[in-house]
Amino acid sequence: MPTQGSSRWRRAWDSLARISPQERGRLLSVYARKAIAEILLVVCRGLLFNPVGLWFWVWLLKGQVEFFGSSHTIGDMIIVDYYLKRKRHLRLRVLSAYLIGKPHLANLYLAGFLARTLGDARTYFILNRWLCRLLTPLERPLFFAGPTASFTQHPPEYHELNRLYPFRLEQQLPLADRRHAREVMECVGLPREAKFVCVHAREDGFKAQFQPQGHNRFRDIDIDTYLPAIRYLTEQNFWVVRMGESTVKPLPSMERVIEYARSPLKSDWLDVVLMAECECLLGCNSGFSQLAHLFNKRALWTNSIPIEMCPWDDLALWIPKLIFSKRDGRLLTFAEIIERGIGRYHRFQRYEADELEPRANSAEEILAATQELSRWTLGDEGSEEDRRAQRAFNQLFPAHYNAHGTRSWLCASFIRTHLDLMPATVQEAFHGTVAASVR
Image (cartoon, rainbow, N blue to C red; front, side, top):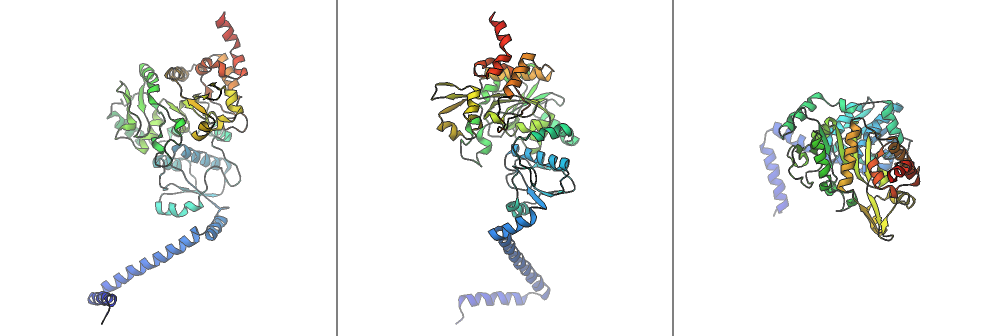
C-alpha cells in the first residue's frame, strides 16, 4: 500500500505531466534558479561570516578598499564629512565604499548630499540595503581617517581643512530643495522670506530604541529653560523653528514660533535644509548641533557636558553644565574638573559612582548667552577683557582632551557669573574690571 508521502509525490508528478512542455520548462527553470541562488547564498555566508573566511577577505581588501558607513546618530555622520574632505586633501588612492543603505541610518538625505558634494571617482556609494548588510562585516568604524592615520572625534586638522577649502556646503544644497522647504514651511506659518533661528534641546527620545533608558540622561535639557531666550529672539524680529525628534516635550503656544519637531512635516531632507537656511542655532552639545558647523552657521551650545566635548569651531559660543560634588558639598571649579578627570566622563554611571550632580544651566544663563549670540551675529565680539578671559579659559584643556586647541568661545556672561569657579588666569584677565566695579 503506498505511503502518504509517496502519494503526495505521485500527485505532484501527475500535475506536472498534465501541463505543457513550455510551462514545464519555465517551472523547472524557476526552481533551478532558486536552488542556485540558495547555494550561492550559503557559500557567500560561509566565506564572509565564518572567522577564517572573514579574516581572508579583510586581509585581501584592507589595503585596497575601505568600507565605511554611518551610525544611527547624525553627529557621527559629520565624521563622514571629515573623512571625505581629508581623502580629497591627501589625494588618497584607496577605493572607498560608503554604505549608505545601512539600517537605522540617521539621515539618508544628508548621506546622499555629502556623497554628491564631496565624492570623487574613487568613492562609491552603495544604496542597496541587502548589499550593505552583506558588506557590513568588512566595514571600518570611522574613528580614524585613512589606512595609517589615527582619528579622533574633534581632530584639529578637520578645522584646518575647512580653512584651506571653504566648501560652503550650505550654498551647494539644490535650489529646488531650498524653495520647496520655504513653500512647505509657509504652510505652517513661517513667512517665505523670514529670518529664523533653529532651536534644539536634546532629549533622550532619539536614542530610546538603541540604548538603555537614561543612558545619557545627564546630557538632556528641559526646553522650558529656553523660553525666555526664545521670547528674546522673537522680540528681535526673528522667527524660531523648534527642531528635534517627534517625541520632544511640546512648547507652549507662542507668537513667531514654529513647532516643527512635532509636526507631520518633519522629514530627513527638511531637517537638513532648515539648518542650511537658518541664521544661527540655539542648541546644545548634541549631534544635531554638528549640522550648524557643517553649514558654517553661528551656534550657541548650552548645557555642554562633558566639557571636553565643547564645540571646536570659532563660529560657536558655549556654556557648560556645572558639577556639584555631594561629597564636598559644593560646586567644583573647572580646574578641579580637569584635574580629577571629570571633564571626560561620558556615562552617567561615573557621575553617580563619584557622587557628582551635573547642574543644568538656568533660564537666566541661557538668556544672557543668547543675547551674547545675538550681539555677536551683529559684529559685536565683546570687550578685550572678555576675549582675554576666553583665551585664558581655552588654555585650561590638556593635550589629551578633545577640546585641546579649541577655537570656540565660552560665553563672557557665563565667565563673569561664575568667576569664582574659573582658573586663576581667567580671574586675572578680569582683575582690572572687577577692581573698577568694586570702587
